[in-house]
Image (cartoon, rainbow over all chains, first blue to last red):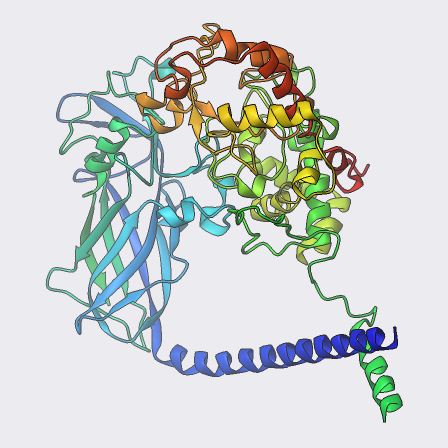
Length: 266
Length: 341
């Protein structure tokens, strides 16, 4: 009996010491990481990424009507998509990967079309890469927050998965109520995977991230690419695409090349 | 020497239980359980530290009618503890505004082992599972922005979120993590059969004979210890043309998945009537009669059921006796899981 209580107390002591040590070591850790952070911060700056929307050569305006090569007419009332896992390749061949890199672009909110990428090491960069959509990891990891908050309306609840890109509008060719057209493109695995990896070189230019300037990279997004190349969409036939299937896949294949380099403001 | 040592230990021990210091440690009452002999769960509360407070918040949310569009139904409306969180007597769930669903509400337990959720497996994670019934227009028909607004305007929830997550800033992620803490802790592992496996009780001859039938004819898919393989099968139910539910095919787009539905666990089966994805059978006898004489050869019928799957009258009686040993009365009487209000 006495031995048992001794043992219990010894165990409590042990637990206490372990907790104390863990507590102490945690504090020490955080101090160390602060110190590590400081010089890193001094070696890095940031850049702005700006996305300008076009319909072919025309600046894109929500609800304006555009004409496709096949004569179909479309006016777009909603245009949203994810850009994730942004990385920059430097002239020395090294690359920088943005952490927690998920951005929801919404044509209706100009603020979402211009965002800052921080903690970029001071270097000259020659190209940018990113994914259109949300990688499979975040599609299978439960409840997310920030740009990936399912409350933002870019998440399928009945068949788990992020809507990578969403385009809604009106076309005279559509036989749906209100002549509506809705493309909700998703799917992160299998034959109809809609994830698109994009790499855009800055032709002969470079982004120069320094301590004295925050350069801006301007990319063009040509929305017409949704409707053409390689598959030309007939809006009397392709009207409502809100599931993962061969049609959603072909639309993702279409828009895979919708981004291009415009300019850099160093 | 010994005396001083004990005093020293006592002082330290008293420090470590200082009531003013309330570290967020997993409580003794609410904790992860992996019953002996069970596989590792799929969900281990990663990035979602299981606490008493988180569990309590999840329980409040589970029984919260504010989660439906007109504040009329909660998750607990169709998942009732006395039927192992299935919906007794209701073939289909009753949604908001008297809308009728088209699938039967399954029992909820041992969800941490699920590789997918819903009859068609459309949901891939326990944390995002609640979004399916919440958003479904024929169930709760509500969106997350409204729910966040309703809960944020409620002082009780401000306090509960603060207790659970240290913040009054309510967002969808915290709501869903709290849900997972409640739903993940709905462990059911204390049926008579579990006690038999632990050598605590014995089974009758009839129950043992039924267990043998089960092992021979059912255990391929209703695999122990969860009593499901978490896979999707077509068990030969004639297609209900008024519903035309294609099941798993709707999720995968694969024609080979047409009319396939998730293998349900047999645990607590005596409590979870009506049966099948569309609740078409009211009794276990009807279920067993389906397997003995009702299997219809439709597209994608499971191979095991294709060539004269039979159950004799004796086999059926014994099997039924065995199935009744899978009821976990401790689970359905667990005060921790009941509506706290």
